[in-house]
Length: 231
Image 1 (tube, one colour):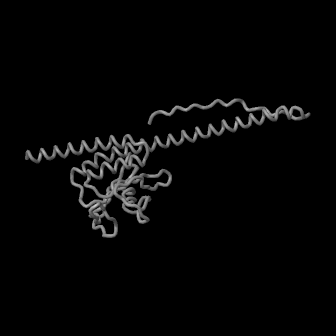
Image 2 (tube, rainbow, N blue to C red; image 1 turned 60 degrees about the vertical axis):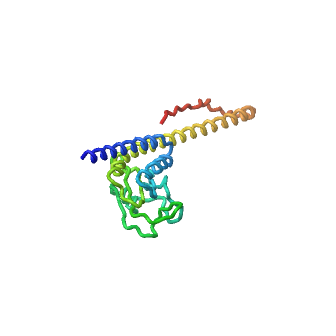
Image 3 (tube, rainbow, N blue to C red; image 1 turned 90 degrees about the horizontal axis):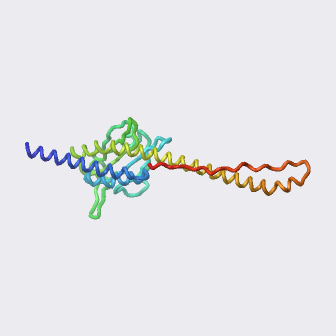
């Protein structure tokens, strides 16, 4: 009994330490790709290795595009995006529950190292859910089944990932809107300057022509200042 209690405490410490480390790493990401890379590079070794990919939902298309991968080779047979209900990733996104494949055929995928390679025993996809919405999907192909402590790690970690993913997506959208607004203001200011220069050039010439009203310059446009709050 004592040995079993000590083992359970060790597992709890392992889970808490893993969640704290990975949650801290994804929190500092500045892009979706960086968040995905930090997640899979830190998580996959804890889950026993394999091949992994992280998919993030694209706004208007409602598709899930791969933004990061671990141990995945390039090739035409490797899809980059899925819509809900399409493949394991899409089905996981549609149902909002973990999806699994077992009995993987030899030609499906290989997990390779410098010493060799073989087909995985199973593929699992986990939804990354925030407030009832699937923001992303984590897919892992591995040789072994995740044990209770790995399952506990994912159960605690994925909500943290979802929260950070939601905040980052919102910040990126705000940043994009701000950049577009600044660009529009810059173009408006350039157009005003050009028109005033043309007016200054044409006014004395037009004034010399009887019956012609000189062109009035636009009032000066004050440059707009924007303050970007830290994200």
